[in-house]
Length: 256
Image (cartoon, rainbow, N blue to C red; front, side, top):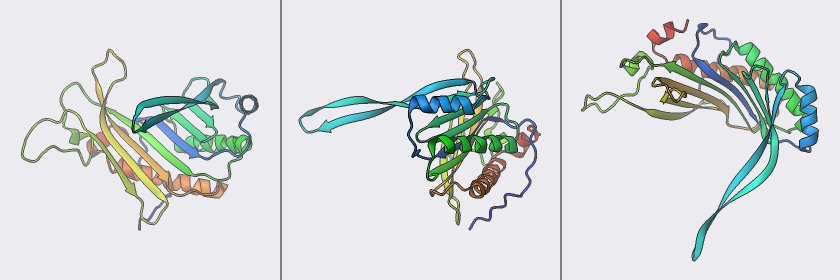
């Protein structure tokens, strides 16, 4: 059984490589979810998020069978919710009939402020959507470590580092690793993605190592405030253990 210690202190990283932090509440609304009413309510309740964009959903269906030509059909599911952004676009809240997603883009500030805002937005979601329980809650942090233009061993960044075949000494040019771990004795799982990603600008030739850590619940639960707070603290501890256990010591020093 894994012993979780939310009170454990981790090194403070002034230059942490976080590009996006996300808290995701999957919780189906039970109140009426009508565009006009929900839009007006969120405009009133979220003055700090003045940019609001309606979201629509689509579903793909495929028809297959003997003597039937394959047919693909797109079904418009209509209005699903609102995407709300604060003034500088660094904080994004998506309210939909299936739940709430809160994201903070770089620069990430601190856990207390990030989690506190997620819980404040969750209370607003409960007020307008009245979900009965949370089917899944996730804490996801996407980190990006920039690579220099010269060739540098991956083990300078990741520990353990991905390795090629033991019988052939050839340089590693790209990798994509996805692992999922169960947390013994607790209703959590962890999905860890490690890969190389080019810079998003079309004129850039630079690359970065992506470390994507997603900790999520594996059982539905009632959203009592004490339960939410405890689970978020435990999931943060798991995220930190994976992060600090995945970065090479030399690279970690550069984030302090």
